[in-house]
Length: 248
Ligand SMILES: Cc1cc2nc3c(=O)[nH]c(=O)nc-3n(C[C@H](O)[C@H](O)[C@H](O)COP(=O)(O)O)c2cc1C
Image (cartoon, rainbow, N blue to C red; front, side, top):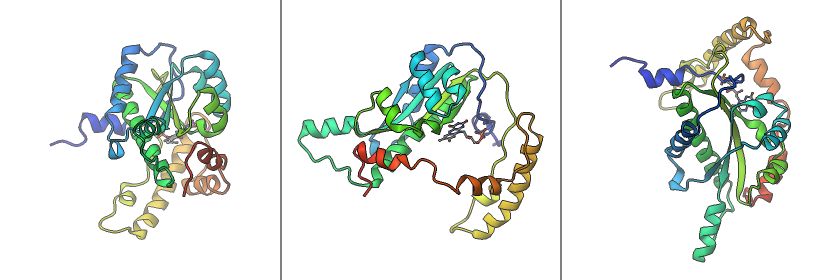
């Protein structure tokens, strides 16, 4: 057997795409991409997600602002919102007269994981059609406004957005943490992490220095230390609680 094969090559050829041709994505292609999303495994088969395709230009332009602003949220041929969704489960429990037990942080994990697995399936299916895209965590910047705009009911929350379209060009690939630091055996091995960090810092710095747009000299450890030095979306805690997730 030869490694990589065509599917793993497609996966390992990943880079986020933020510039798109104007060509529309055929509706049947989008349908197939969303069908692929649905074939992701699901925790206890809860299928706790809904995928909203945002086509209304006014809604797109509002989301573009709230997500950053991020230009491609407004202009990408396709913008999907992957939403964790227990609303349908609440309807079922009500109909069947059973308790609806959501008082656990576990449910947030289940919903977010289900939505993320569906999103990655969609992303790979899209790539197989020559599309590219980028996931958008910015959809959680203003969760109350997004929920109002998209009419998200209680027991749901936006996990990520996704821009899709035909790539205008292929940017270079951002390096990944060395395999030796990701693949451990039997137990967590701190030494593997330490060894990998210095290798990864060098490759990340080189990537940033040499990329054609927005070059900079920054290592990954510098980038992460800065990223993690301040709260990012503290609004999510209250929002999740207001959506019915008590986070006990
Ligand atoms: C859940 C999630 C949310 C993301 N949110 C954004 C975003 O809001 N804007 C953006 O430009 N990129 C976003 N990204 C893309 C990451 O920045 C990107 O995947 C990472 O820098 C690695 O680069 P690569 O995907 O090109 O390899 C997101 C990625 C993920 C997985």
